Image 1 (cartoon, rainbow, N blue to C red):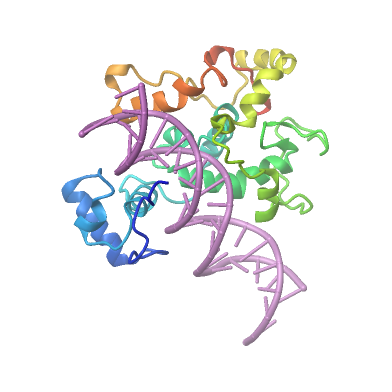
Image 2: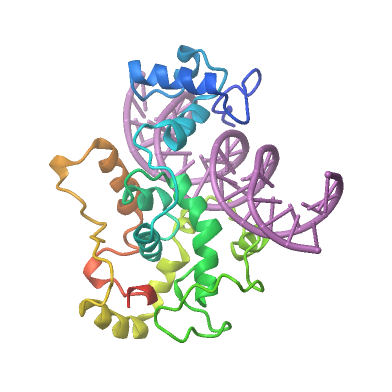
Length: 248
DNA sequence: AAGCTATGCAACCGCTGCCCG
DNA sequence: CCGGGCAGCGGTTGCATAGCT
């Protein structure tokens, strides 16, 4: 079949050294991003292009905001995840300075547990029937409990391994599926949303973030890639989105 | 203090879809 | 139109370390 994306022999792997980082930074500063395949050789790095791209995007880029996520960021991630599912790059795109990897890690290590502790199923953002319902609508995160704490294994257990049969529908999140067949609840919750009860005011109109003329080619590409292909199975009209629990 | 366990994060892997010849 | 190469994405792994016994 296809040859590997990069020659694995002779390439460094694992953690990046400061020298490697500097080489990559220097190269991109002078030549800019792009053509990742040729960057390692040009920059004198014994890494595959993929690895360089990842290192730059997730760690070295100057506009990366590091440190803890704020409450508003947390809130936004949860809400966007309810809408978009595991489309981390799209979610990260709404969080300036955050990378998809960072958002994904934060979700898996913090937010998923938080939702579970609140009695909310992180997969579909609905109250879990098994766990006790939180008393208040802003159920305080009960982090002290340990019975449902997600160890790495627990988290993994909630997500069955992708069956690689090439079926692209597996990229559509459970949330999206849930949105389709949960109309009776959405009728109620949508009312709450339209009454403006959401505590955070963020433009969640994913479908049209900017006029086409003002958009980057990257954004256009993303749009084609993600929404063009899946909109019929996810959401086409944001105004028709059912409101999930956290939007109340 | 040492050993063990849980957690967080960086990096890797494999798949997908776009682009171009 | 088709196939190969590439970038990008999401899932997963593995290491470092904090916390606990």
